[in-house]
Length: 390
Image (cartoon, rainbow, N blue to C red):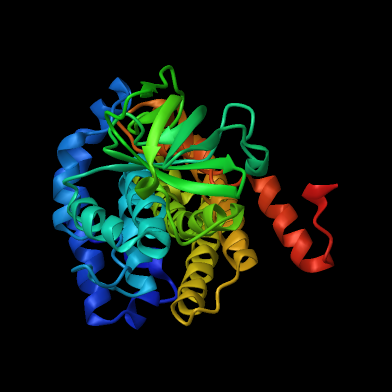
């Protein structure tokens, strides 16, 4: 396992970690260095998620670790955040897999599911024996999920589901899909199992970002579902959005890891790269850029540390989570772009990590709410006026 450069933690935040949190972080860091990094370049270039990692991630408790009961670990929010930081230090696709599995699939089953649904699905999902996906976004309804067209209609003691979902992480890998659809009772969540007649998936190809991630479309053509497939504990779009807040929290931590990885690589590179008679690191312009980026990642880490404390005390609001997702995604993307420039032409080579992070972060700043949508969420909190509903 590679030890992080001491200057990356200039405010000595790691000194505040508990022994359990230190163990969590070091364990996930070792997993990323030993098991993940050797696979990433080829997986990203070939455009596939390395499925052989799923069981190992499950064995490490990376799926739904803050959930309780059903033999789930019930870890704290900071420990979970550190997991996501270290996973995205490897690759955004790796953290996305864990975010979806835990925050967008296990969380709604745990919070809104029936006892039978919880008993059947939570442990297999936690172990990685089963994979899940979250179907909310549609081809014509991304930032406005309330405009969804996918619909479920009662037919006796069954439901008939029709529609399409797009940009779905883990879609072709999933054994179970948490699907949100419009009904006469309002927006409801359904558990749709792989192999159900009329339910098909297709892999989205030719991506320029998140290439080491399974991104799919879900298709529902007169899919008949028993009433037991319905998540009984909720009606309305708010439930789906509550799941998004779980994912947004993990993103705010995760992108900090991507930024740290870029900064560490760039600092090492300019320290070794000889130009104009010496290392690039001796130039004032280079040092100013490194200083700016260190300030950015330090502020990002402080932001999620505070958010973890608020979330752990059940005091985190959607606006707080939006602020962290918005700011840290923008920070990480700025850091990745600057580091790519410091690496020169090597910055676009997969022999280095920064270019891959940069491409991935172009997606991460968009999904689970764009930068602009989070601006409007904060604007609503400030003014009381929901500008996205004009």
